[in-house]
Image (cartoon, rainbow, N blue to C red; front, side, top):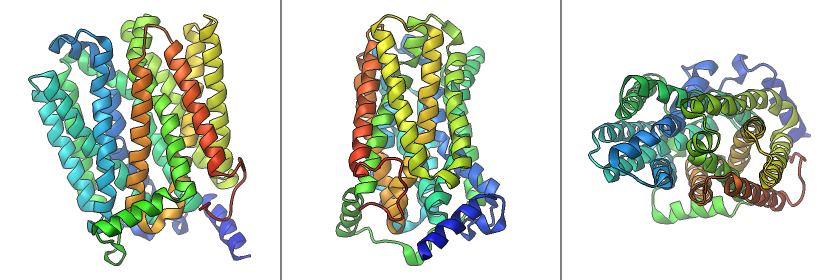
Length: 429
């Protein structure tokens, strides 16, 4: 009975996100809108640094005399390696020292790495700068998720994450076009100047307004035994590890799309400088999904929405593979299928994160850290394997998309013990 009352109260709160009772005291003096915008802004450092580079890849290749187009994908994948690896340490550090110092330190590393990228004399130095940028943004992603978990839980957390994701995911929509606009007035190094300035602004806003959300009394030891115990608790929780690995699989398909996007749109469909517009049209579906999820998750629940989105993701992958195999995948159909892929991903990502983090409130930083590392590193491995197999056709991408999605669906079935679309009163352990 108490559980039913709690759920009813939670849904009632979600019906009015502007109500004072819905706003956690953990992030005051910021109100709810500012909190969502700040979280989205610091999370946006990552996709901005990824997607602004897409139109600049040919320019970078020409500047450093990189003869193989697939090698230019390293500018993206190296960034993600730093991002994925860095998350292993950011969570435990934030659980010990608090969210603010780790977040601000990571953003400072990001700004310094952007300066190094601007001055990079060689391709290898540029890749080092990209790895450091990824390391810096690993703090922003882990700490942003931990801060939300410090302040909210359950469906409230999913709704907050969805609203933040709606803003955060809008970045990939405009980032390639923004990058193309920068290239019209300066060379590719100008993109890193823009990234540096954005990072400094986000850092200043966080210093000024974002409070510490982890009380001293709830901080954890950095002793190896304690950290390993928290890691063990995270990876042995069926719900957490299940949704982490499933998210990694679906993210792998998305990474493969991003890695190959410039080659697909300019090499296969010959869009030239209009490629950023096509990418923006496709990515817009993710922002729409984030808004819809924030409105629906309180009524339908995280599982109903995310399992439905995963089923749509699988159906889109199947149709894309079939039509490409038959030689019947023209640009308009590819655009529609890719937009549906982005939309279904947008309906999954916040809910998968919330479901994975739901049982880990007392070790939110460490759990968020490990969750981010698992999803990112799996995504990099899958995405790089698919991206490097690009052969001038869409068959490798379509096949990789289909297989990784089937794997994600199978993992969720195992994690939920076959109970798809059914909400649970308690996390699965």
